[in-house]
Image 1 (tube, rainbow, N blue to C red):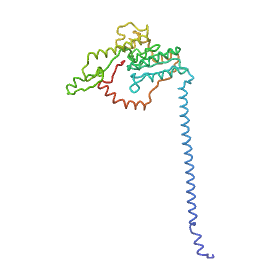
Image 2: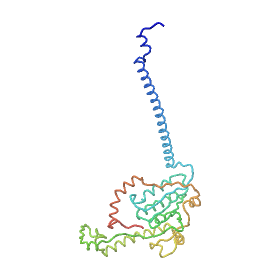
Image 3: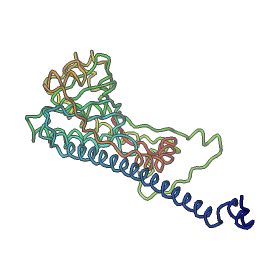
Image 4: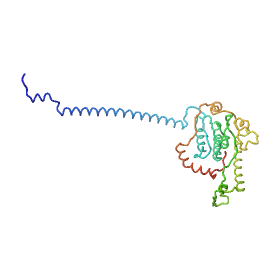
Length: 330
């Protein structure tokens, strides 16, 4: 065996040249980067596709909603508008504008065959109740072929009944509470409490009767008489509206307009309602369309929260001291 060059033997058995392994590392890094980029791109495509899929679904639902609200339904139905709670300004309960907007939308829909006004209310503002009553009668005259039925849930008293009296007919449950055709005004008197605490009331007014019914002053007989006159006038308006709406269906009972309330069973005997039944019964048997579409207009949740947050403290204090409550059909 011929001995070789020692230097050549050493080079033959040594590791690859430095530039060789660096090249391998660089190639692996590049390939890893490319693989990661491809993976990221695939995930990016997936999430974008998912986003656009959700967007298309949302737009589709929105278009269906708009399509529905524009009165483009293909099926005949019974329209529903609810009054649930105190009839008052929007920040305190259900106001006339909400109910009227719902009624108008129901009448505007060409597939509405009848309207149910479902009421669960102890009453409230005589002005708000009268506005709703007047609009119901106006819409009934304008659309005589679309009947309006008031359906009582738990309570339809005072202002609630003021509204119901405008309907073609009223239906309730035998255990519903109906009636309370009267007017009231609420206040507290703090005169004796102030005397015991040694508090002096300092009230300055321009106008002889501007401080009438001040809860911190003794009740004057003339002021009481005037307040009673106001309540009586509102009461007479209430009675007039009920008689116009119910006509000869009302029974001849002395207590009918005394402010008393009755069960649904008693109300049927008194002529305050026309029969027993819930909204499904009325839709199916009277309107003839068991499909019910809700047209109730509700205040936005955040708007309601903001309104009540601002008005809540003032309203609570006003009620506490009795300086806020005016006449109410309750």
